[in-house]
Length: 510
Image 1 (cartoon, rainbow, N blue to C red):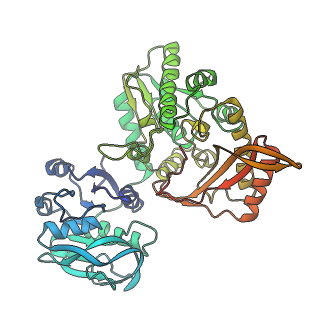
Image 2 (image 1 turned 120 degrees about the vertical axis):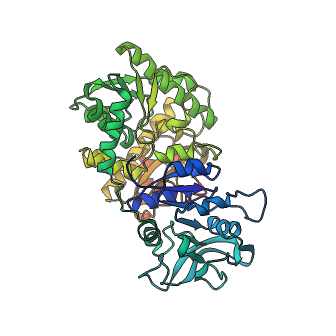
Image 3 (image 1 turned 90 degrees about the vertical axis):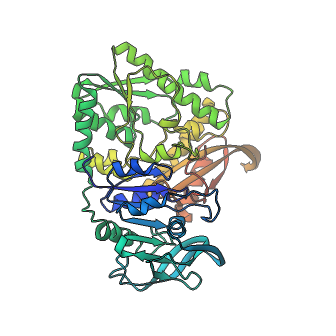
C-alpha cells in the first residue's frame, strides 16, 4: 500500500471498528491491530499515527490490557480514546481512579479551543461518555483540554510529544463534532494528506491481483449481491476472460432473485455459470435446527458446489470471495469474539480444492465497497442492492428449513420490500427483511381459530454495519405491510417489528 497508514490498536472496546471506519471517512487508510502486536512490527509499518481504542477494563487491574511505555518514545503521534485515554495516563505516570459519579451517554462537555483537536470548534458541546474510572492525576507534561461536571479530565494533551487523549467517544454520532476532532488529529497532528480514495484503491488492487494471479485461472463466487458483484468487476478488469463467475443458487434467495441475478450479468464479458443446487442444500439441512450447525453446513456445501463446478471447467488456480472488513472482524479474528460465523470467512471447511483464496475487498467497509463499485463503472442499481447474507433466507428461518417455510418467507419478504419501495424508503433504510420465527400463536381469521407462525420484520439504519439503529418506519406503512402479509400469505397470523439496536443485537436473527 502506498497510502499513509494510521494504526488503530484494539484494546477490546465495542466501537473499535467504528474508529477505523471514521478514520477512513477522513480519507486516511488505517488498519486495526491487537494491542499485543510487537512494537517492532508496528514500527516496520511506518504509521503516521496511532489510535488507542476503548475497552471494558480498568487500567489499574494487572490483568487488564497494557502496552510498553516505549511506544510513546517512537515519535509517532498517538490519540487515546476512553480506555486508551486512561491507559496513556496510567502508563506515563498519571493516576486513574474509580469515579465518584460515573458517566454514560450524552454529556455536556467544555473544550479548550486552543488544543489542536478542538480548534475552531464550539467551546461547549455534547460528547458520548461511557466510563466508571477517571484520570485523577495528570502525567507529567500534560494539560487538561476538556472537562465535564463530573469528569475533571475529559481530554488531555502533550503537544510537544504529539500525545492526545479523550475520555469520551468521538467516533460515535452522538458526540457533536466528533468526526471533526478525529480529522484534526489526523490532518493537523499526524500530517495526513487524505490520500485514501476508492479510485486509487481500484488501481492498486488490480495491479496486486495481476501480480498474484499471473497466467492462472480464477473462479469467483458470485451471489449477485453488492460485495461479490464489485469483486467480479474488479477481477474482470484485472484478469479478463480468465475469470469464471459461478452463481450457486442454493434455493434460499428472495423471490425471483435467482432469475434476476442471471439476467443482470447476461451481458457481461465474463464466463457466467448458474448452478441450481437447492436439492443438495436441503438434503444436508434436513432435520437441522441449531443455528451454528446450519451455517457451517451451508458454508461447506457452498465450497463443495464450487469445487464440483471447477473440476468441470478444468484447472482453476484461485478462488475469489467478496469478504469485506466487518465480515473479518465479526468472524472472530485473533482472540476476538465470534459474533457471526455465516460470513464467508467463518463458513469455510478445512479443505478447499484451490491453490489460494483471494479476498480483494477484505480491507473495505460496506460503503467503501459501494464507492469502489461506482468507481469501476457498475450501475447504481446494482451497487445499492440490499445487503443479503450468503446463506440467504436459510438464516432468516428460525429452526429447521422446509419447502413450506421457505415459500412463506419468500412471499412475506416480497410484500415487505415492495411496500418499503412504494413508500420511497428503500434508500433511507439501509437493510430491511422478514424473519420467519419458529413460534406459533393463536389467531382469529374468518370467525375461525388459527394457530400459525409469527413473522418478524427487521429494518435498520447504519453507516458502517458495525453498529445499527432500528428504522423508524411510520405506523401506517407498517399497518399496510402487516395487513397484506396476513391476508396474502398462508400460515402467518401475527406480524411483529424488531426495535432492537446493534449492539446488543446483531442485524440478522441467526
